Image (spheres, rainbow over the protein chains, first blue to last red):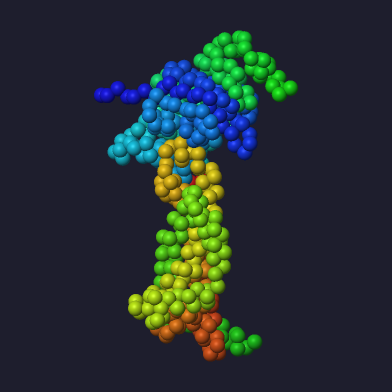
Length: 240
Length: 234
């Protein structure tokens, strides 16, 4: 079997995103490497979601460059899970098969891969239930299964537990850990400090569209270097 | 007042007896209007979805025109299709004037804008929710349109019914291009118009009730289907 091509590192240089006269991402330099779980931390409006959408390829930067380790601007071997997953009006399994079809997986393999993905997130018993009547937590697990079924090298997660209750959030965290353990690079945004502590190997602290700090998680929580990050950890209001 | 009562009784008799002439008129009405809805859906649904999802030149004017054309006066549509199909017209050699095919064409012109404009709105709302997820999964424009049409299918049924209701109820267009020829192009609405002007109220009333009953039954059916489907599929 041929060695799969390597997507990472992802290099961002001087990346900006401006819209309607507002600068949401301001000249960011960043290198996302393989292996660690990277958590993007920061207050609401810091630009976490925009940064992930730029990396995933949903948005085009208005300045600077984003480069994968492969020629395409938007390679297939990376996926994204959103805060509120959009489920298609069909069964849970069909939702995964849809994603597999778009990814070019041959028809004969889709059902089996979809069922395997459902089993990994503990949803095999509801494979035939309509996806849209599942609970919020189940929908998010299904969204993770859908992304995982694509076997991405990089998975972006945009506040994946922000709309969930604590129990469902823990289930989602466990799945994220499992995806990481299976070899996928995790890039996740959150404004939940507890979650960041539990999941992060590396923290990117974002404030007003700038990366203020990029540190190993243990070090970040022990002694953040930027004043904003320190205030954020202390639960102070960073704009004061 | 007694004439109306008499006419009502006669109408009930006519319906109960299963009069063959009455039946032929109803069948032709349904064939013409269902055929028109089918063709208009083939054009209108993809067009509406493309207008909702795509970004192309002329999109805004086309949307405005479609919305405005939802209220096209049937007689004017009838007149234009008449001119197209009349012997001296550009499509005259086809010999379609005063045939059921001409009536289908006129109704397609009449209801395609309705189906396109209403489905554009529904698909645009769905697109607002779906856009990022579909792009993220790598769906192209055509794939997105297909997915959105399928996912909004329960709402689109209502759109098709709005088109069918309009087609079944209109009289101006089919009167002009069909000619209301007995046994050939006579449908429910043209019969009602003719019989009323002749003073034969029973047949007109019978058809009137059947027409209303038909539209009611179709809409009830669609409403129930939509309710059950949405409960099951969310």
